[in-house]
Length: 298
Ligand code: GUN
Image 1 (tube, rainbow, N blue to C red):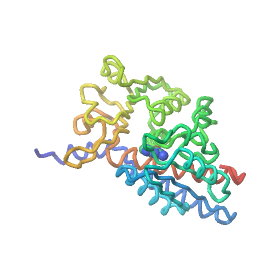
Image 2 (spheres, helix red, strand yellow):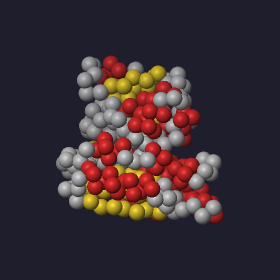
Image 3 (cartoon, helix red, strand yellow):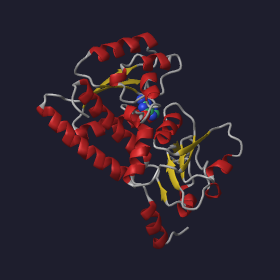
Image 4 (cartoon, protein in one colour):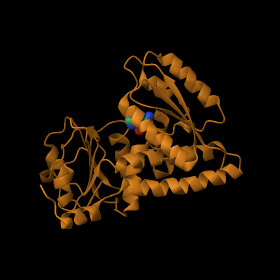
């Protein structure tokens, strides 16, 4: 199949380029970090990795690279999959008490025998740069003023919409996927910005009847080609948060990009869309946590 240059040009004009926007965020953070060095503050992220899940290793590599770009220090603690919940909690308590550590990240998923909610709960909310603790998630419900350490993927989506000057207030937003780390917090953040939000999930009846109404459609399920062109309104903004590895090794999102991009006014690619934004927002949260822990203004 051949694709015309006209079509390539039109799609490029609609792309929300996460690689480009995240680079801009990282460069601004690099500047902030070097200014923090004058106050003898060296933002530092502690990362706990259990096992060698290939996806987790790939995510961690991206995060470590972003730390190197911004000047944020990185310390990684690797554990065998046989590690106990208690052992991980003990390490987190040590990191909570360490003044040189400003952010603590436990890479998910954890092995089944580890009780992940208790591990996450052990993280000091002030160092919870993933924004996964109940305290940080709950606080977000109050207003944008309380989104101090918001979960990185939803925050990345908001930053992306802001960058492309896509209005949120009064817009019909449909989110597909109701996970605790993406769908639910993203809904809260969009409601904080006065969007009208519908959250769909695996038990939603007639998914297309909802997605077709969306001015902004955000999809975070993990199912390739879940969203086809007939499910999308002409001119909609489409944010693909899914990531799926096909049998031939290709990475794709949840949206049929080729056909949906013809109808959308803006669309994120996969890879290169929301993924790099998540990493950039993790860096943003780490710098914010380091400032707050040292009583500096954000
Ligand atoms: N696993 C997949 N995405 C994430 C993330 O954003 N943070 C952590 N800690 N683990 C993940």
